Length: 266
Length: 273
Image (cartoon, rainbow over the protein chains, first blue to last red):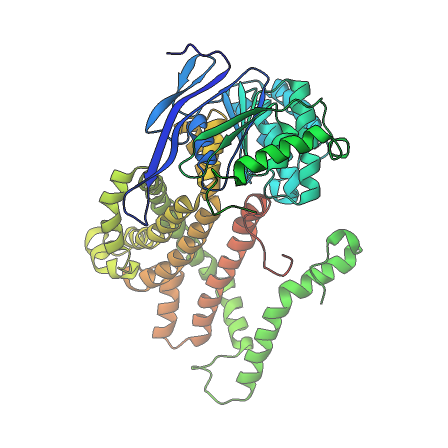
């Protein structure tokens, strides 16, 4: 059945979970299929409660779907693995490890020698702009720095695809824009394949090659839009770019339009 | 008093002075009040010995060697009791925390037994081990075990699931999760358990020695009471306190400073947050 090309194939995922209000099952995802190509940056966007985070967790192997399947590079996956790195909204750094040891964690599990580990970690720590903070513990880092460390940790492990679950939702607006600019630059230079979940339309347009739109609960794919903007992207350049605003308007209409449920975030 | 200023900002001499004030002051004030109360001469000294009397008794017991030898006996019992208790509590705690069938089986038993004070085991301790060290160690084991187990289980329940998930997405299997996530994440609660375990162990030690032994600091306190040597009772009581303080300052706190405080999981207080 794996005729689809692409690095990641999400095929016909259905997911429902226990609803404490009704005592029955609530449908969260309905026959969701998404393909992500090599080196592609794809965002999944949708109203809160549409199951986009659940979808990402299923891809990561942290949740199990009721039906459907996930393949990475043609291999079916159902459990968590180092081939799918993940960046969490709440950073999820190990408080008992320094920045460097956090970034080295996956490499240590792979049994890579200490010198080589340090070398790889150093490269990614510099890439995310954390040089000088190698020996600091997470509680001494700001929110933005913690998320940089989490990105470095996931990328240093050389995953086939990087999964990001609203990674910049917890930082302030200015830091968020800087992190977004850094992420586009890094993912372009490292040719990282990214599946990014967000509820922020501008963020999705700014970062992505493609934006997949999910409907409100239960989540279904209602649009799959190519974003054709030049890279590298910067906020000061894109703010006045007519195509950027076109994409933003189209997505806004899709999300807040006739298909959308009444209750909407922001 | 700004004694919490970083040492580097003060000249060395001033820093030592600040440290001395911080460490000694509370005790000096305590002794002063004690001295003032006994100077009022309200109670006879057998009921309320003065600091000077206690100090003289301390010197006598120190010179005769009985203080250090009985403290030594007590500490050896405490060490054995603590290590045996911890050696059972730690594996059982991780087993119960990580394996739901074990938890369901052991939880009711542990819950029942933890309400029974360590000292309630004295009769059986004497029947099984006779008067002496064996009985005392057994009582300490029964006192140390539960606080360690309970706090360890709490620590396991408090682990943020996202940390385990993060380690899984970095390639961690079950063994790596236990070693690199669950073990360090439970350290703060484990340290609390160890602290409480030792404190409970101390209490049972003294109680146990009074009844089930013929040696050790608890026995000496009991013995002094028989001869109305009140000052010696206080010497015994205070020496337990001093041993605890030394243990806390020289062992437990340095461990905490190197681990949980350094990681930001535990603070000295809430004033700087």
